[in-house]
Every structure is written in structure tokens, then in C-alpha cells.
Image 1 (cartoon, one colour):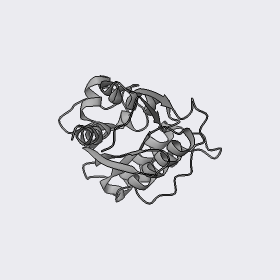
Image 2 (spheres, rainbow, N blue to C red):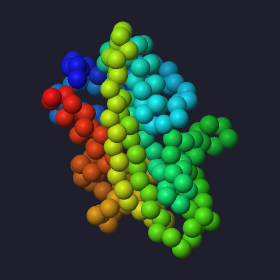
Image 3 (cartoon, helix red, strand yellow):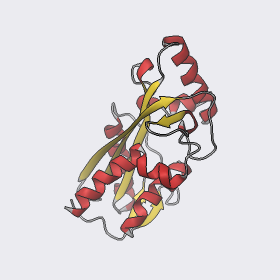
Image 4 (cartoon, helix red, strand yellow):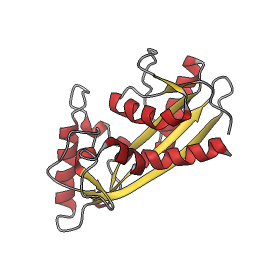
Length: 203
């Protein structure tokens, strides 16, 4: 894989996601800057998969900034809901004015799970696709990650973001909203994808 260089754009407008990705990138010694800080627009996510959307976001940020850009698309996939909310995870949090309320999203997920399979274990997984794009020539690389677990109710913890407070990973007792950030960063779907990215960088 091509070298990244000294500066990388993190193509997200989500402050929680920016912090988490920046922490994962930190060992590379690469300076990170958020898309919001550069005034880059947030593209419409029109892809059919996490990889499609990550690729779209990374390409736009690289083209507009003239720097390599890293984008993530991720979401919660619930077995009882046939993989929903999936790529629409953030949209489930949006109210009628387009503002995101994650408590609203978690409540919707739990109500639909109870209606679909009230007696089944609420199995779910977080999925992530990371795409890195270089400016000018449109080259991209994509890496996928996943972490399996179950959903719990009511939500617990005020760490993390999104659906973290209702997700307990396999082998853990605390939700992603309760876990120490260092531990979460070592076992998350994003960390799984990052391990693959780092391996490619070192090859």
C-alpha cells in the first residue's frame, strides 16, 4: 500500500468518531485533521454497503483537501431485524428536523427487536469499513472489521457514542458505553479494521 505521508484527513463530522479514529491513528505518528475543521461538506451517503459509503466519503475528502483521507462507515446490525439498521444506523437517530438523537435510535431498535423476536437472544454486531483515498489519482484501499455481541436494555454508560450504551461485546460484561476507551479501542469493529490497515501499511 502507498505511504500515507505526514498528514491525514479524517473524513467525519462526528466528534466522537473523530476522537476514536484519531486515537487509533496516533501510533502511526501521522497528524490528523477532521473534515469539519477544513470546512469540507458532508457527502450524501448513497452507497449500498458500508464499504461503498466509506469509499465515497474518503474520495471526496481527498479530492477537496488535496491530502490522503481516511473515512469510516459503520453501523449496528441486529440479527432479529435482518441486519437493520445497518447502513442506515445514523438515520434511525434523526428526528423530523434531521437532528440526531441516539437515545431515540436505541429505543427504536429495542422496540423493534422485542416486537420481532421477544424471546430470542438479542444478537447483534457492529460492522465497519475503513477506506483510505489518495488525492489526484482516485486510488483507494478498503478494510472491513466486525465485533459480535448482544444488545441490553436499558442503555448503560456515557462513554463512546451512537449505539455503544446498548451493546455488550462477546467476552465482556460492560457495554461499549461503559468500557474504558483503551479497552474498547482494542476490541471494537473499528479496531479490527485498523489492524488490517496497519498490516497493509507494514507490508
